[in-house]
Length: 125
Image (cartoon, rainbow, N blue to C red; front, top):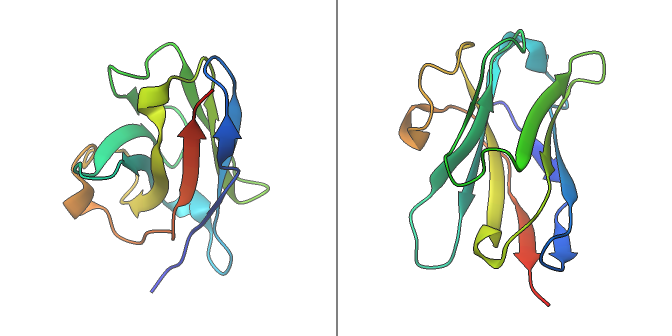
């Protein structure tokens, strides 16, 4: 079972920024598309963004377009989610997960394979 590791979450004020990282110890992340998802208490897990294995295809949820940017550094075996202009409604646990390469399965979390443990993002004044 492949294991991803998210990091970079924390407490930030509205309008602030965070950069999440998704590392892949033990396997090459450049074989996979990587999706970002989030889940707030009492809500279903929702797709936030996805980046293809080659980085040339990206998708964003309407709620984060223009504020979030997904990128990958295959040399560092890491995928990033830069989050700007954060809002209280962005508060959630954020997860990254693998898919087969071109984000064709996004945003359905059921179709994504290996997941990380999640990192908490709290946007509050």
